[in-house]
Length: 211
Length: 252
Image 1: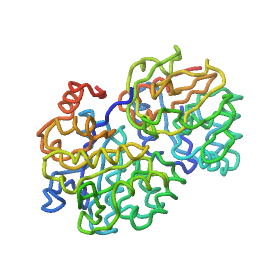
Image 2: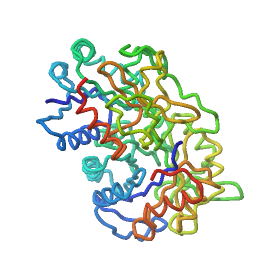
Image 3: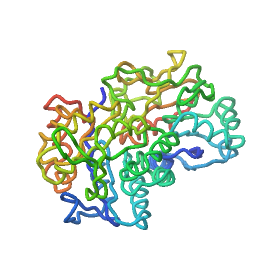
Image 4: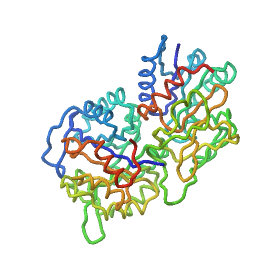
């Protein structure tokens, strides 16, 4: 089975690659982690991971600069229903629009927007550090994570139109979307590749998930 | 609830961990990757590598340390020291750093901070401020390991950096660094209260109560220490326990 981590010029790929490789090595079956910028690899992948560090617009632009990548993602994830995990901005990109330094178009897989964190002025932005997860679904990818601390670092948050796609929240001046799930798509606002055992658990859940 | 972060800092010189006492008289304290793994296992919330190598040629050594750390440690890592350009930021992020810290460059060329924040996002841009008290209620920024005065006032500078897109301030009191007499709480509070972004208190930790005070009285979002952890005076678990007993939220 191949796990494709998409390389589109967003940083932090090495951490994601190493975390997925570590987890994959401990699971049954022959699982191979590849970091790729090639749409044809995405079209052959069994699991697709979209990491993301940076601003929404830059990430969207970087991804679309790869000829055929957005189409490949749409085909593999939306039409052929292969499992997808978006991390941080990678999760945000599945929303319809992002309002970070201008308005940018996302994939539109989930109806809703990515907007600045709306917190009291006593709270710092970015929301940076470890915060506990409130899992709001029985989705297998988020199993066993309720109450666990995960590492967040973001100034913008997803606001999906439909509540049922929210898989997890965390409390930062009110509930903030920490995870999304619908169809074969999952996303985490936190960084599983940086969340020690909690993160490795989520990655294992994702790799064993058979939607 | 967001937890208070405890961050051990590893000063790295030519690929080896050292700890400066007031930034002179360096003592070799080992292999940085081994130290990072130990802190990962001990439950540190984040790790900070500070490259204090004198020359730019040693950057690749640091990149190697970051790459190897990212292979073994699935925790957030901040890297600073000698970061001069957007290209430097990109290289470190690609090696596995989560946040990159500007120090001298933020003073000399603040536009690089703004450009890097625009390119990579504020969440990965840290500005490290080394400040010394020069008068009642006035702290001045020093660069080059505390040797060069800049004439810049620390609180206003921190506000300027936040406005330019920095996502976090790593604030070190040069007066306290290496003294084990506690953070400069007034400086920390003045800066933390003046900026909308998180502030990491640094410089002077000698006991666990100092860590508590950094948050309670200094209003810091995170506390950074080196010697007390490196030399085994206290463990990360003991630090967390002390903070929890003081009523501060920590990750267990």
